[in-house]
Every structure is written in structure tokens, then in C-alpha cells.
Length: 159
Image (tube, rainbow, N blue to C red; front, side):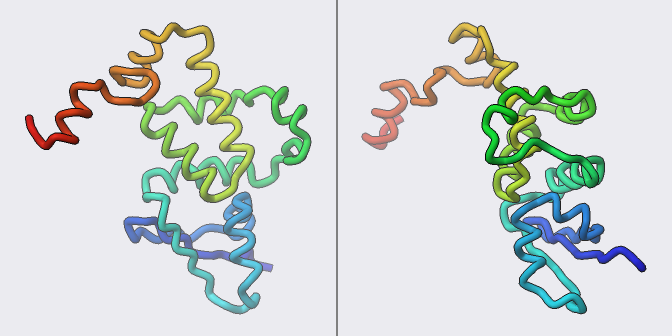
């Protein structure tokens, strides 16, 4: 019996034919698929995931299509589960892509990918000073608030 395939459509309208088993690593996509009849041709638009990020997420899903992860409700198991070496290597991407993967895995409800990516960010910032955090995140201020001068300029409309 041939594997069922579905088509995922990225926010920039690229189409990704993918095995249903791979796509169902996403709880969101799995729920959408369950709403269709088996004989329907399934296309799932993903308004919040661009094609570059979707390519990466699907690579992760393909690698982990047969993986078993700690129970989503077992907080202790999730917290103590180490990041697999393959995942660590896979997530060695630039900072923007790492954050895009986190956002996409959250949107698509892929907890193991989201958790691994978030653990990696946690490791990146652990024991860092405010100045080091500013450098890591390319921000002038760690708390994300702009300086009083720039805020006043925007409010008053002057430059």
C-alpha cells in the first residue's frame, strides 16, 4: 500500500508534497488531516511558516518520523531529556532561523522540536551577563524597551 501524501503550502505559496506520516509529527496538521475523508486530496496552507523554515521543519519531521518522545504531560521528563546530538547539529543555524524554527514548531504544535530549540536558546544565555546577552541578541537593551530618547522622538513626531 502506498504511503498517503499531503501537500503543505508555505506562507510564500510554495507547495511541499510530504508523506502523511511525516506531516503528522505536527499535532496541528494531524488534526487538520483528521477532518478530511481518506480519498480527499489534502492541501494544508500554513500562513505563519515561510518556505525556508518549513523546509527545515520538514527535515526534522522526516528524521524523527519514527521517534518516541517523552509524554507531553510529563514535565519532569521533558525538562530532563537531553537534546539529541542529531537535533543539536540540526539546530546549529543562525539565530534568526533558530527563532523561526521555534515559532514554526509552536504554531505547528511540534513539542519535541520546540522544546529542543528552546533548550538550546536556554543554553546559549545561561550564565551570561546583560552585556553578553545584548551582544547575543543584537539588542541595545536586554529588556527590549527602547531608550527614553528614541521613545520620546517617536511620540513627539520629531527627529
